[in-house]
Length: 356
Image (cartoon, rainbow, N blue to C red; front, side):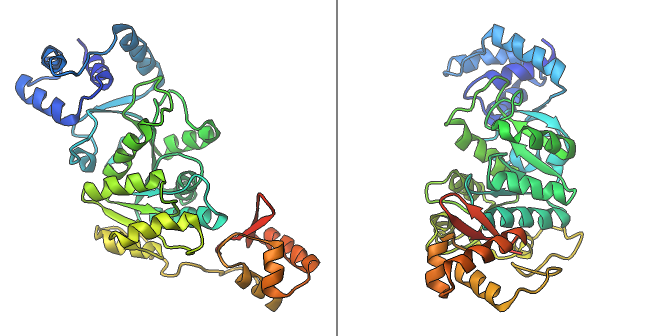
């Protein structure tokens, strides 16, 4: 059996881990001979893949340009190889070199505030400029903003799928996935035609954290999947970082929970790099969380309105009560601030402040 067929078969063998494959490889001494040893795996409940499915896989592999990394390859990501639950095979579209670079994971809510989305983008941009590859899960919200930040800095980024690489999920991020493939890599342990099943994403998250020296959580509710990624990171002996937020925001509670449990509180990209203790820093990182450099100074009334808004979404009525300004004046000022990129309009008549 050809090597690529062996790898495709191993990727289809449910329950198989890198540890299984390494043990088999040590016994057989060659990749082709691994197939003979799979019979012993069936005896302990690990089934062989369906031959028809395997043929469909091979056709896609031949036509897609995908590369299959076996856990015994020297090009298999070194940090991920240290994880006990590492997958035996990785499907990769894009650059294998990106998987060898120092990575940091940035994850968070699929429905972040405007401030959270910008924070993820800006942290990713600066960390990318410092020499880190940004790894995330291509979900809408914080994940997408993190990938975008890395691309904006012309850095590398890695997206780990919870599905097969033959289709992008969510489809709204199809164009983003294509851009990531050009400047980094798309990665999955799942063979083609694997649908977006709920159980796959927590499993996917161990790869996100396993590839990375540390995981940064930007915004997350208490039951967020981002906390699953952080839990994997902690169990893998990797750094866990969390950005604090308002005590009134449910999207801050997950981060605060992580901080109480020992995650490192960070306010700037420089905080992340200093904790990682790996040689990086192609350029000096900012040590301030918010900067309005290059923007014109706001009038006193606008500054008062922004102070009243804080970093928690609020309605016009709430802002009228906090400032004492007439409702018409608040609405007009919010429009100007939105055009200036200082606030964002949200559903339900609420407004959210955007850090500058």
